[in-house]
Image 1 (cartoon, one colour):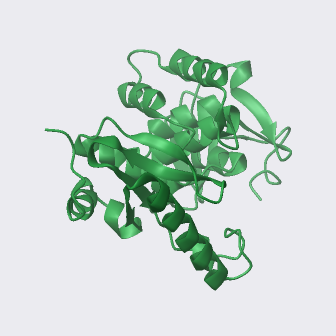
Image 2: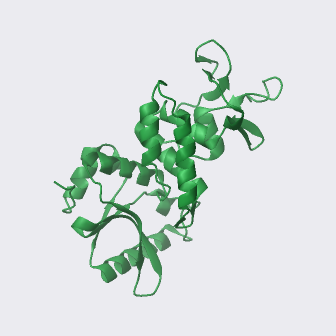
Image 3: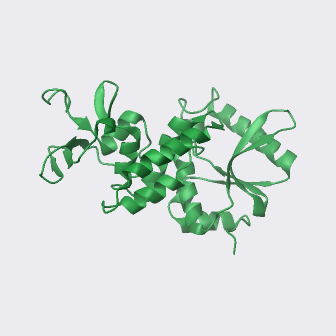
Amino acid sequence: AVRRASPGGGPVFSHLSAAALWGLPLVGPIRDDVHTAIRSRRHTRTEAGVVRHQMMLDEGDVVRRHGLRCTSLARTVFDLARLLRPEAVVAARDAALRLVSVDGHEVDQDAVAAWRAEVESLCVPGLRGVRRARWIGAFADGRAQLPGESVSRLQLHRLGFRDIDLQVPIVGSDSARYFADFGFPRSRAFGEFDGEDKYRDAELRTMPTAADAVMAEKHREDEIRGVTGWRVVRWGSRHIRTPEDLGRRLGAFGVRPPG
């Protein structure tokens, strides 16, 4: 509707609207305002549900997605880092890095390095929120497959965990290849973010029914525990609301940060 009501080539969608066009997850309470970029001396303002951000964009900062002009992927996550809470930004950045550098479980390290360099080039000293944007850019990891895994990563970091492996490969007794979300070598344990959607949502689960998905997950966990001898600790969305919530959940199973 905003595009149809705009003259000429239409607005450049930015921030949350650009994230939606890129298919990035938006974590937390999100207003449904439309965000656009304007070249004006007037400050950012909101009118009739449209947030107009005063921004200076280079030619490479603007692309087309689904026929609409929007900020590039790197520019979008850079702008989000200066606007949203860290939990939301980490989830969006992990997903963006996954788009450009991960194929299945294979990571293209050259693409990761190029992505980090592109984001770093936007971090001009003196801009509001640039320090957080730079840190989250370095912290991003495309191996995180779900927003809940991304937020878990952030909470684990806040708790002091530093020796965590992601998407740990395990070959089961049935010769199948499995992947655990997190590996805690010091505790000889694997961690799994267990969102309910992968069982309840027919579009997200890989099995025909919820019962099939539960049984497949049970078999997977049995294989992982059986061949490694490590424990499997699961947590859900309610456990990652704060670092303390996740710390209590892990601590109940003997998984604690170093020191």
